[in-house]
Image (cartoon, rainbow, N blue to C red):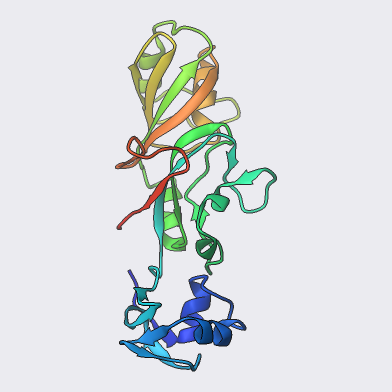
Length: 228
């Protein structure tokens, strides 16, 4: 994590504790200290690691979170409905730069999603070159017909409107209507479209794992801070 050197009000406003204009009042109401010495001047400069608020270290300068996204929550800053960011502490919602999801899950899709305010990391993990494996559990409208695993693993499946075939994907059969599918791409509605291409329909979708990060130990709406 970073350890930048700048004015106290810049630290506080970037991390969502207050706005720049509110910083003076914040310092009068809260014990903000640099190396254990309380400060009242917002122009004081310090390294991030040397500042405390009411005896607590500042939040990390960059955050990476793993969340178990519940159904009905939207991965957007502006769309209607319940936004995923509303599940975070108010202070984190005010951070600058803003926390954003790494990719998206549909409103009705649950499970593992990463969020960060590190733009470079977000770009890296959403790049088509990233090859991050994502494991989904899908409940299907119809029983499997038997050839899906072979088709998905072939690397030849074309989705409607696409110009390139999908990369090989691994299908694990849990039951005749429940499967686990591991993909390393992130095309639009990819899992749903893959089953549509073989004559089936996904009626429930849950992302179990994003890369190495699983949500099997998190309840819906729970999240944890990751170290990168």
